[in-house]
Structures are given as C-alpha cells and as structure tokens.
Length: 297
Image (cartoon, rainbow, N blue to C red; front, side, top):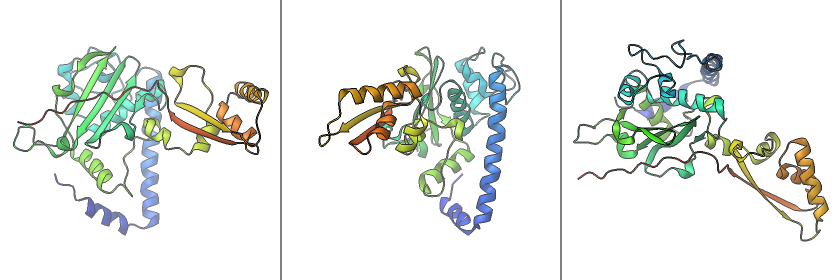
C-alpha cells in the first residue's frame, strides 16, 4: 500500500486549531487509558491485552506478553506474534515493560548511535532480556527481485546474553498502519512524530530535555547501574579562585539534599564562576546490538 504523505500533510493543514486540539486530546486520553490498564496488570503479573498471567501461553491466542519469556514461548512461535501485531504494537509493549523496571535508561534509541543507513536501530532491556529492532533503508523499501520484496524489519532477542531470536531468522513485515506512521515520521517530521507515550520514552527523549530541567528534576544516584545521566562539571574560577573547602561544602550539600553536585554548584557559584555541565547518557544503558547487512550478489 503506497503512502502519499503529501496528501496527509494537506489534510492536516486544512484542519482548524480546534480540530487538531480535539484530535490530540482524544489520542492522549486513549493513551492514558491503555497505560493505566497496562500498569495495573503489570503490577499483578497479568497482561492487560489478554487478561492472562504472564506465565501462561495459549497457542490459539497469540499475545505480546510471550516476549517476556515468562511462559514456554519458543522461537518458532514468533511469527504468530508478528502476524497478529504490528511493529508499533510490539515495540510499545516492550518499551512499556522496560520502563517499569528502569525508566528511560533501559531503552537505547539514541539517534547519535544510529547509522544514517538505518530507519530503526535500537535496543531495549528488561530484566535478563534484550530486544533489538533493526531496519535499513533497503529493508524499508523491500529487496526488489527477491522473495523479500516487501517493507520489513529485523528483530533480535537475547536471554542472559545468549541467542534466542537472531536478526536473520525472520524478515518481519510492517503493517499498513506501521508504514503510515513511519513514512509520515520520516517525510513529514516537522508536524508528524511517532512516539510511544510517556511510559514508552527512551534515552533519546531523556537527552532532549533542557539542561536546566535535567539538573533541577534529577536526583543523585550512588549506583551507576541505576543512573540515567552522567554529569561532567567544569568550574572556571580563574578570576576569583574557589577554595577546596567551598567545593567540599557543595559536595556535602548535594549529598544532603539528594541533588547532583552540578545542580548545587550552578546555584552556589553562579555569581563567582563560570560553571559548565555536560550531560551525557549513563554508561550503563544497553548497547545497541549491531546487525551486519549482507550485500546482494
């Protein structure tokens, strides 16, 4: 199915501000409804989609919770999932689960780490499982002249670091709805954006927050494995030297109020020194699994 994104843009531009506001309101309400149902079920170990425990599997009723591998899900069962659910559904469920364990930093979807040749390339971690979605521009077009001439993506699943589903095991087709969302996101990105809601956000969203907001709303962590960000702070006080005692006081205050050294330094020294903080993703976020593309002969 061809997607005429210019046509969709014209439809959008013809909508009134009130219509756009109402459309966004309805979308937000539906997301909140699903997110609340998901959280309520997750806390009890029950899937909000099929209303069955995560530990159960019914081969006649494929469900996304199989991917958590709490049940006897096998690699050969994966087609039943993607024949019932599109990429957007699969990705959202996985991301929502990951964020229940560790918010944002269990999802490495950093654009800087994605090759220019990729449409999709990110890894999601949940407990002892890692899933990776990968789609090159060639995959998105379909491999013309082959049996894989349809838009598709590749999927990898690792359990305790061991192979379970490999990238080359399946060429997973996108649904028409997936193609609508992805093509508009790519070609009409100034007004159309795909996201997975607040509970599906990853590290790309995390680093897109304004620096002042990050400093103000984050708390310090003594465990690197639980951290979302890494702060590097440089204090330039060449015109008004700062004693080691002041630095120690800043460190002590940061520990006492549960804030970062960078946050307290920005507040305490703004009239005395130039304080610069660089915020980067924590080193403990999962690495994006790399897929080697095979050249066609």
